[in-house]
Length: 380
Image (cartoon, rainbow, N blue to C red; front, side, top):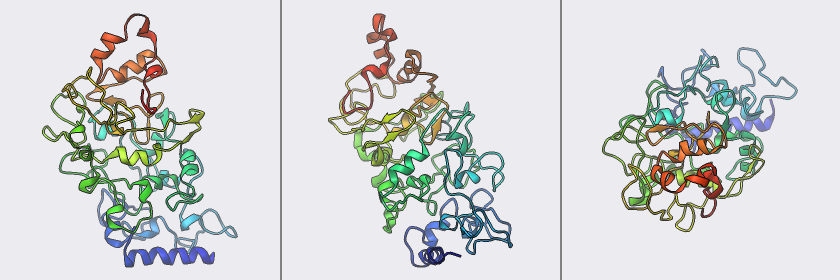
């Protein structure tokens, strides 16, 4: 076995012993590391207990005498992983388990954000693999673009799995945690699945997960955040169905999280251009801190400024909607973003701006795309 990879494995085990990003406590509290739990805890090989490192890392480049791909003389895969780390939008180590049917763990159901936080039961997207590719998902984060972007940033290299840009595999928790993985998020069952991209590799305990600390919530924006309604309701709010908590104290600050990347110029092979740099400050986007005035529907009808969380409108992985990862459920109702048409945009904007659409976008303007005047640029 390659000496450098042997050294790497030793370092991995030392990290478990001495603490840091993958210390034993953190890992055993993660979705991958939970032991003796039929719901969570990685389990690929029957010879090892739930959560054992060998389910992902083959420490001697073979299990039971069978050499994993790629065979010698090439040696084991990156980080001693049992499979190709990342090859394409649909071939990725994570997808070997995170698929609803088949896979090394017999199928893992990971629902969309519209289902988990929005409570939308019309969802058919039920695993991470299909969230990133057709036919179920038609818009998604492009994994190759992420790989290119993170290479050389925050401790990532060309060999880093793009999923690790957002998820620390040794720390990420399930959301909902310790429940059947088809369940919706509730106020008493929460996990924190993401790590702030710019804190990747940090050994500081508070940096390992993002959203679990008091200063890592949407309530950071004080009176600016208002949770949207859950599907079909005007009394239950995202992300956990609460009827009383609406200020973001129960929601990860996804603005800070997403702007780690989207506050910079990103190359999008899907759009064939660089994405717009998003400015969520008081001088930027009206959906951010800039005061956008009136024309908003409940629960946003009060005369005050609001700061939206990115996940209020966008799926984190992928969406059946046409572009931009637009959610199928927004603020209590459904959207139909089936193409770059006025009807598609209206189905989204109408979720919060019915009176604006009625009073301003009529007559000659009724066929104009909302995106002609409104987008996530620096100001509209």
